[in-house]
Length: 224
Image (cartoon, rainbow, N blue to C red; front, side, top):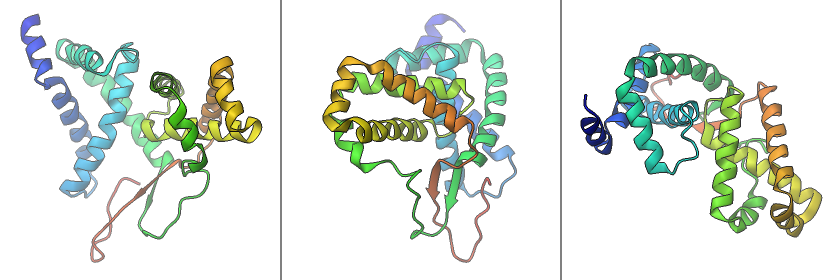
């Protein structure tokens, strides 16, 4: 395929559609009795993690979203066989982490524990952080998670880690102290994020709760 054809295909979203199809094939291959809506949910859920994984592997995480998507697409279309092998390796580990990190809640009244819920008291601090700074922290956190083989629920887990670290800092320095720290010593924040990631790596506890609505007459048959 000529470069010009690849460029057109990427701008039309072919790379993304190929990735989604690859993820869906692997979800179906698990042999679980999933209905269409469950397949779509798990496919979209896993696709977001796969996209981060590939962006990190190909060194594209620091690009803006549009540029990253375009460059990722070109790599998919030019080296599809290699990308498929990478996805096979990723998916095997993603399933391991899904079973380890995600808990399914069937009762709507079931409450998350304090270690899983995002800390509401840090929301005000988060809102005061410049968007470019917060985006960079999230990106760095996702990169480090992937390096530590935490490849499932990256959006949720990175958000949990950042809020957990801010919660610890608020308890130590107060709200104003945390804001000053961001201006004068963001390295401490980064080091604490890495420490929190290492703690998670060494733990087998679930970090994400998904609330599942099922037909009362039909038991849920999901990945577990």
